[in-house]
Length: 265
Image (cartoon, rainbow, N blue to C red; front, side):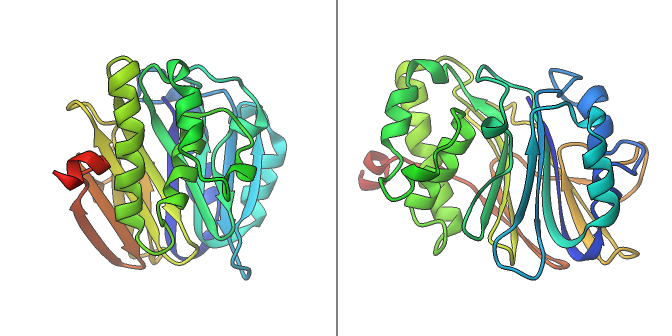
């Protein structure tokens, strides 16, 4: 499993989420508390939004704690909206193309979790990616496949519905040819305007997800684990939900993936 953190609000230096807090994302890359693996050293990445609609993207296969470029970048770049991720591989290779976040146009996406037994139906999952988006398939992860399938399902016009349909299509494959747990999923994604997050699982063990509004920063952090031990104000996102964050505003809705066959029934 991986760890990730996202932020939306008034511009801040990336280090205020990524590296400065006592339990920052870099700290979680080698000392995670609420994860099967305490070490998440199979690469890292950041996608951040500035004056342009497309996000800046920096990814590498090094452990986050050992890259001086990451420390320098986060200390000098400010952003109103960014996604950051440290990776623990669930089977695919440690490579830059497999590091999150992934980006296509104005969209960025990162994921923590797994589709059980993905290697046994990887080819079928690849076939779900529409031809128009397949050129963006650079790596081999289930996470990138889910993102591209969701784009094909209409992510730009219907973020919640597109992710429900994409997750359902991947879950059908997992249940037919994979192993339990079929789906465990927390993800964050953005179009550069709003931040979205999902917490879902086919069992009752979805990965952890928290959020906190900071009046002093004028922004909200959405994270796998709280950034400071014992800090008040962190709220856990319920399992089976789709959250939309727009500045201080927050909307939480049920997240109910259903296949095309189920929708037609």
